[in-house]
Length: 234
Image 1 (cartoon, rainbow, N blue to C red):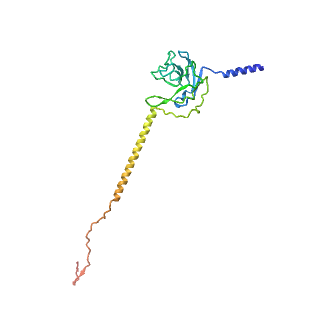
Image 2: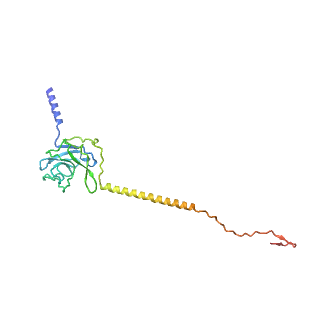
Image 3: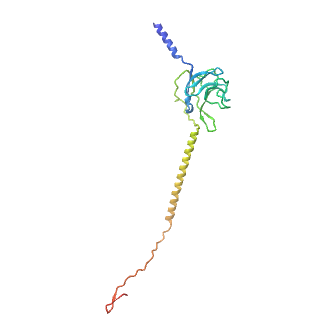
C-alpha cells in the first residue's frame, strides 16, 4: 500500500508539472496602447510553412511571417488572422504596411518561448503622417502553456506621447480657449488703463473760478414826511 501511495503521488506531481501546449502566454508589454496583448493565445492551426499560429483572448494573432509586407520577418502579434494558404505576407498588407503590435525576429519553427529577442512593440503614432513609436521590449516574454499574466509594475518608467485625432482636436479647442482668454484679459486691461489716463488728465487741468451773474436789487428807502403829513417816497 505504501508503494502504491508513492506511485500515485509521483504521477500526480508529474501531471501537475505538465501543461497544455496548445496555449502560450505573452506578457511584459508596458505601454498602454498595447497592454491588452498581454494575454493567453490559443492554438488554431498551422500556416503553410508548418508553423503553428494562435489567437489571442482579447484580439491579436500570434504567427510567423517570413516576409510581412516587405517589412521584415519573424514571429508577430499581428492584427489579422494569417492566410494559411500564402507563403508570406500572411495579412496581405501593402508595401511596408506590416500590421503588428509586437515582433520577434526569431525564425524558430515553434513560438519563441522564453526568448528575450523581441525587437519591437507598437506604442502609438508619432504624428498624423504616421510612424510608429516602439516601446520598451526588455520585459516582453512568451511562455509555453497557460500562465497568469504578470503585473507590469516592474516595467521601465517611461511615457509615450502618441497621436490621435481626438487628442489633437481637444488640444486645438484648449488652445483656442486660452487665446480667447488672453485676448479678453488684454481688452479689459486696455479699457482700465484708458479710463485711468482720462481721469488723470481731467484732474490735472487747472480749476477756473465760477462767476455768477449779479442781479441788481432795488433797496427800499425810508419814507420821509413833509409838513403836510404826506409821505414822500424818495
